[in-house]
Image 1 (tube, rainbow over the protein chains, first blue to last red):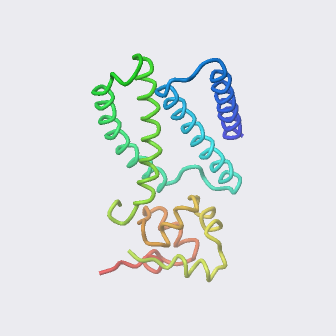
Image 2 (tube, chains in turn red, brown):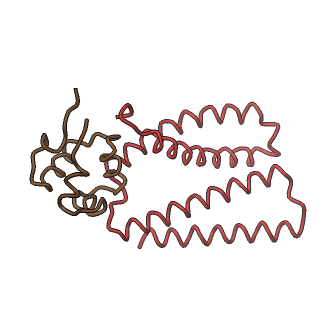
Image 3 (cartoon, rainbow over the protein chains, first blue to last red):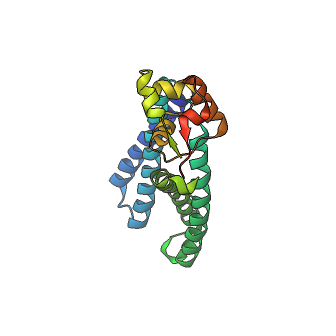
Length: 133
Length: 64
C-alpha cells in the first residue's frame, strides 16, 4: 500500500513536471543547459516509476522487498556510486562555467549523483559473480 | 561452489518463485544461486537444505 502511494506521487509529480515544461516552452525558448537539467530530472523520475512498478509487482507476488543478495548489491553499488560522485563533483567544479548559477550547478550535481547511483546498481547487478562474494 | 538447487526444485515441482517465497528471499537470489554466481549465507543454505529435507552438504557441493 505504501509503495502504491509512492508510485502515485511519483507519477503525479512527473506528469506535473512535464506539463510545466510544455507550458513554459510555450512562453519562452528553454536554454540548452536548462533543457539538459530538465531531461535529467525526467530520466530520474522515469527510473523511479519503473523501479516502483517493479517493486509493486514483486510485492504482489509475495516476494520480500529486500534480502541478503539485494542488500549486498546495494552496499557495493553504494560504495561505487560514492566514489564516482566524488569525481563527478570535482569535474562539476572544474567546469562550473558551464552552469548559469550556483543553484543550477548544485541541483544538477545532486541529480547526476542519483543517476550515478542507478547506473552503479545496474552495473553491479550485471557483473555480480563469484569474485564479488 | 556448485549446488543441486535446480535439480531438487524440479524433483519437488517447485518454481523459482515458490522456492524464493519458502525461504523468504527474492526470486532473483534463487536465479543467481542456481547459476552458481552467488554463495548464500549459512542461514539461507540451512533454510534451503531444510526445505528439501537434506543436509547442507547434500545440496551445496564444494569444488576442488
